[in-house]
Length: 293
Image (cartoon, rainbow, N blue to C red):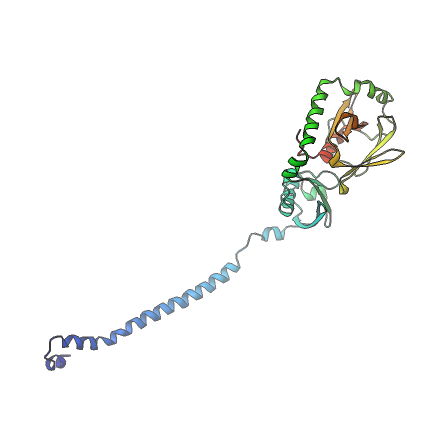
């Protein structure tokens, strides 16, 4: 470097020589690139490790996968859906799953399995097993508002009219049936109890003419079968506008009950000596818990 300085008389030539001598320093970026490359390699390796680690992270379904489940067949509006659900799920949880399948809000659902499915009990408690068919009845909110508004008006009018009258069991038209006394073959009753509908027809009761009548709830068809000695009427549950019931004086463990099959009271079909423990279940099954009154 000193020799170069002696033989270069021009100012600035030293700077040129300095630049030339500084060239070896250009290798430094290569070191930086290598460093970056190493960082990238490390990054890829870390990413690979991260991917491996991520694959071991639970997706949240492990718990449900380990639970005992049942396979159900959900039937609604002539459509069938397959559903796998933990056997310890409640009826309310089942309604949520049905909502995700059908779009039918839980509050608008009537879920049937050997009667109206209770929301607070588990499927295990209800003894639901693999392959069970679950019937769902219900309409969307828009359908209810469009179709059932007249039915709402009828129900309110009937209820208001009932409040003005004397007890049903004292009216002359009913006394002639009640005075026959309690049927010998009537089903046992429990006052103050609430039970699900039995798996067999309700039988041994009287109709308005004093003849024997039985009620069969065909949940899979959404029908109420009213059977007498002469014939069986198959009534769609959706066509029943209202249900009126009242305990029988002196026999409060039994009720008299009317199914309103048309728009006026003249269409009421009366049944006498209905066991009290089934009254609420009958109303819930036929009218649904989402009724307006």
